[in-house]
Length: 183
Image (cartoon, rainbow, N blue to C red):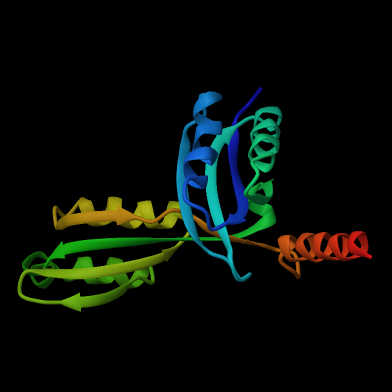
């Protein structure tokens, strides 16, 4: 079966050790995590893990179900790229002298709609947000000039294309069920 890139959105309580439990599921199934981003979500006390991995549909479904069984995980769901709004960020440190000596470097930065965020006598810091392919392409073009001193790319961040945060509806239903059970 052909593998494709999936994005998992995992919501959990902010408890130490959850990240280790989540990544252990991938390790046990020998699936490499391509990118991982962890941050607070729009819901107080709930953290959001955005994980990308190459997998086939059956395997990613099993991984998602295993993660969702973890006691401190609130919700886990996998998506394909067309179901999400996705962005990454790239940071490039370029030689100031190379940028000054070759105006083509500045043209490339503008063509990719990247931003120069700092200039000093040693380096020029450039930031680009967008899709992975755009960020990597900018790096490749800049690297051809031998001006890249450092380069890094963030993990993917993503939101669903639906009108509400799916975990919000899930938490509301859980709260209602809890309150109904107390009566």
